[in-house]
Length: 302
Image 1: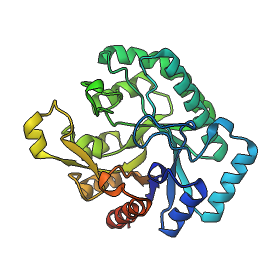
Image 2: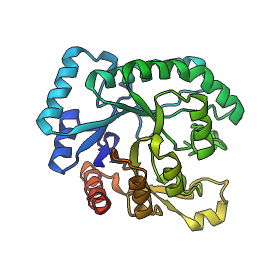
Image 3: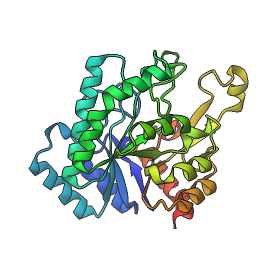
């Protein structure tokens, strides 16, 4: 396995400085964010370390030169919007950009693009699976042509009353993963596995890894802490009773998670994803978060 990080936490640094930091700190790889240039509509979104809207041959060569100079690999390209947004016009914009990210990955020789399946939070589960059948085949066809695998992250994207009760990502649990893989049995579709999203859903992370190990194409390392006092007040149907933390500062059983990964033969990237508000005060604090996470995770990865 290769230890890396998700570049979103260093969104104020240009690509060259992100790669230089990764090299200096001993990271093997980085997942590079590829949002369309512009203002973010939520935290950790809107970061553009690769602008795929104008991905010329000269740009490709420049990026490859930087990777060679710093001796850091790209674990995957990341773009995490809602491809099943209720607005058809917005869905089309998202799909078009996602296909550009896929094409850029192929030009760089990067084999994975990470994203969300998406969800219309106003619709039922069944209605959303019907929407998947409409929206996703062209995207998967583009990935197939490009020789790129799609890594679906399984965060439910449920943070506010506007997204309750289903959130904005259909692929949040094993039952829905099975349906997706049955729906597209031969598609280049896999999981970008993040144990933090299963903790607060009371889903056994190690069991899920062992069942879906052959489908895991990328992994994130983020922890989640259950606030039991808040949970007592609002119950499981409330909000705000679980918070993302650095690896080792929450409730993920990391030894069980890595044991399951190795049991399934996974030997790909594991990228630290920092979303811990306690480390957001400055660039130095965010860089410290990556160092601290690296030191913790190295005990499991060697």
